Length: 336
Image (spheres, rainbow, N blue to C red):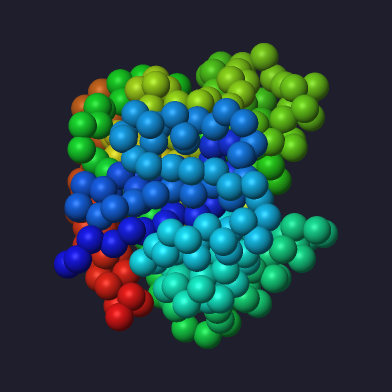
């Protein structure tokens, strides 16, 4: 396949699931010989993703957040494909690509149903989906909310050079906001005072957690580089109210960390209950508490079996070596 100048377009001020996805995407495409540039709609100052891209030797640039600059830059550089991620990048990127007659693909990541101002952007993002040459959704639930034909495209991780986690922390990793269920994680800590719980992330609910935090819940805040943290974690708890296919779950399982989650979004594609993790009825704190308590008593042999099952699932179904060739074929199709 001819090398393409592929733009990965996003609007981002901090690290999160979309940023992890874009990093994995840029790394995977580059390893397959594609010419990739990560384009930030706006420069919000220091960004951990830019640091990681520099380390990987992947090109990136930042614009000024305006449609006119985006349009002019696309017109000047003439990328073969613009692949958008997130509300603002999707809405403006599709218009700018269409006006410049450049192929555009959009990936829809958000599993929650937004309200207020964000709800308007969510509606506009979905309404303008028709401007893309192709749209991806990371879960069936997200796909049902989009007009027209939508292809499912699983999140994925690069499994090369990953070390197995050896820690025992019970952890929450993600945005500290209602849809991710940090209040459930706090309640879990209160119900199991003899165990320590670790929360990595920041968001609008963090100040409330700080005010009413159980002694056994340690708030670590936002981590610029989670690769330095995963080795300390033994169990990832995802008590989300809404999800797509969360990168945190993939990143954890790729390192052998089992995931205990509410059964929402596309997590049932990833987690085989009792084999490589556990899926619990959403909101069922009794079952959630019992499973965490049970995990804390597992033998080392039992935990090693779980670890092997997690890594095997990712390598066979959710690794970049599986996902990237399919995506390159989609790029090839829309370019034609």
